[in-house]
Image 1 (spheres, rainbow, N blue to C red):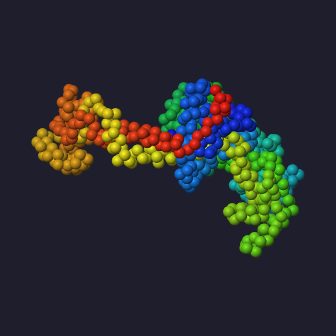
Image 2 (image 1 turned 135 degrees about the vertical axis):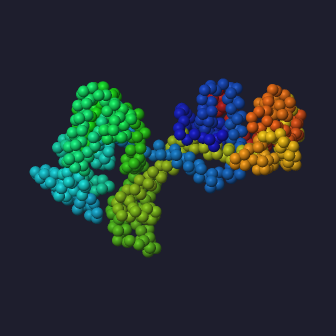
Image 3 (image 1 turned 180 degrees about the horizontal axis):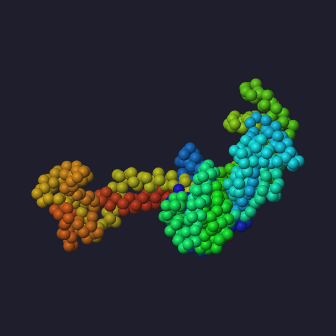
Length: 633
């Protein structure tokens, strides 16, 4: 059905010159249908066929029927209902983002993220948090940077000024994949040269000065195992010494011929995650474990194990099993997309696109009027009626493609975005961006004919579903009198080749209870037999009866019914319920629509639809432009 439209992909077809010169192929109830719309629907529904005269004429008839039903839906006002408009808007919202972003920017961000995933940075930093006066903090960062350039120790300046815990190590952060850092920090770090000090880098935490000690390409994928004697930074010196002594004892045993896998599975391995797995980790990627661990792995050959070495977790012996290349970007695309969606990169393709729209739509800004507006808004914390009258007299702040951005519109934007009032310059930029994107969004149907056709398909498909449901599908299911009347008039269409049993088959655990159970069953309506018998004779621990309710043909797939009711077949009762009887009726032919409800309802639907289509053809005028049809033949 049309409601089951797949939104996950856009169509791919060629309309050629028809968008530029688009004749009318038909007019239905006064509404024109363009050749491009007809050809679009034809191509989607007949992608594997060529348009010969016969198939085209048949499809035109189907298309006219479709459009007649759509006309009926419009006349019924179904597309004016809020539920309809909201559902259509939901479909549209899933499609529009790809038209409202800078694809080149998005691709560049993905490629950059892929490089960040493969680059280790060995770095230190000084963090200066921003509380109130951002300019003062930036100036302080610049002064610290200049002092370092003049010879001051970066480490000492970090201990004195940095607000980060790393100040205790002179600001040292370690040798880490750059993608593990927040985006502005990572981007700045990988662009530095060894020993270089960055300009102040603004992140959500404040301003950073970054010193790069070195960077290198991350390793590829690797399959490894290890034996660990744990002793992290908080361990005592005695504990660290003991861990070192024990790992070298294990190493000597390996040298003497003990199996690495046997030792890795033993109680002396402190990494309980790999115990019982021959010490093995799953296949990992560069950056998954400490750099010292990965250095050791890639210094080995397959099947070799290392000498003991130390990381922040303790002492290790590692064994290399296999190495592979770093995954291609396509293999980690989902991870890259998730990474981008978590930070400011998510909005960057859209912001870049709005900058392009400024050029396309000849965006003009009155800088003087904008600064005057920002000063006025800064001074007027409460915008009462008097303030709004003042703002209404402001000159136009900016314009693009016959759109005017006024002081009043900006205030309305601020009233919907209270947090934006904290930074009016940024708020104005966001307001302009939102205004440009909203305007472009409103132009998509006319700017991109293919998008317009897809949205029309959604609109008409939804109308078709709703009006068909009201006039055919739902009616056929609920109009019991009409269904019964149709059945009686067309009884010959529903004749059975074999008689049918309609009722229940009851199995009893003991022969002595059959008479009593049968008497009770015969006193009940068919629909009540199963629940009453089960409630009367069964409980949580005992089951004395089973009841099968349904309709079955003689010689059908139920051997029990064939034997008990029709006395055919070789089925023999056994097990817990060896004594059977039935209650119900054997019918040679159906007596009512209920006896053949599925088939009768389907045929009644076809009847209702045929009657409805005939009425629509009488009601709505249809004009086919045969000259345009010839263009397709």
